[in-house]
Image (tube, rainbow, N blue to C red; front, top):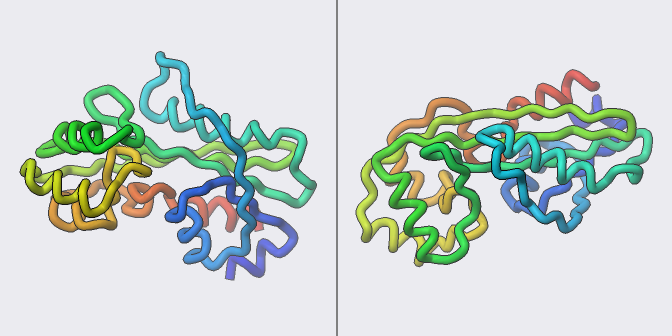
Length: 194
């Protein structure tokens, strides 16, 4: 449906995330993957969506001057925001344990920013989803880390995995956003272009 409307555009997804790539396949969109190594460092004074907005734009700026007239570049960044700090991807199993322990029996925010860039302008949007975890036992946390190795995931968990089934008691907002892409907003934006 949308694929036909977007025929005059070429979508470029600048993400190595298998989940984001799968979302674009599941949205039935034709797209190309283009990756650039970006050091994801943000100024320490930034908070919440300021961080993801900054990083999504930083990823897009790496393609400055390289886009053709009909190309739309899509970059994104996701963080878990908890106790007034950003929780990124865990460094190791010990870090993953500490992160999940801090999320246990608490509510945190998952924030994803998406940047749409053409050779003439860029548009930024973000989505915030509140996720509440039940109390997680140390055994459950260790089991999850050992069996699912969530080292490539912000906040050290994937909601679509075992921990999401047994640990998440409530979600307020977009489920897809917690997986790394507010697909409804992305689809709506692209629909308005067509």
